[in-house]
Length: 108
Length: 114
Image (tube, rainbow over all chains, first blue to last red; front, side, top):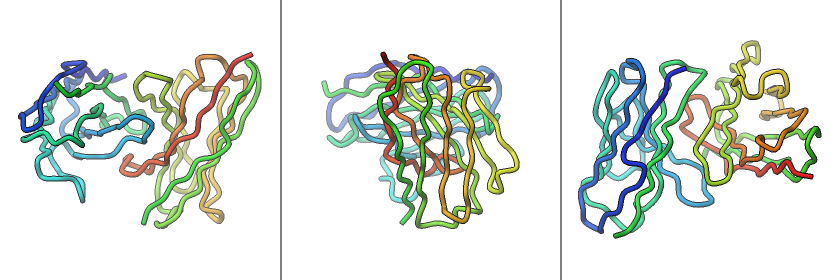
């Protein structure tokens, strides 16, 4: 199985900050990498697909980059509604998709 | 508007059974592969099962293989998960998710406890 490792596991930041979350795959997954946002009690919401493509309706302050084994999610200027948990997910070995352990983004 | 609505969760004793349903609307259900993904309380996301658009190809995570059965009824725009021999570690919110996981339902909670 392909393992996905996110860092950091948690992060404190302020409104307006630039934030970067990283995700590393245990083997090359090309660009088969998605990013999700999850708020408490809600389903995950797709933000970025194919490593760098912005899902329709998602604010442009969210961006993704990377290929192979190393990927990043960047939020250019944190807004109050962005405080949530973020997950990366590989779809290279679909249908056996796997997720990172999550990064909890908290208000400083 | 794409909508996925899960139902069928609840409290069940260890060794018991439960059948989850996912009602789809707002897209051509029969053209899409579907997945079940679960999330234990306070934990991360775990893929559970996959079914192709026609239902002819099915996969399971090792943790549920032999106990869970995924199926679909394209005429009813519905996805199902039959869960047998339930264990405490199956306690989770179960989500149905469309193909590339671009849309998810709101989830249904399954609690396995005596």
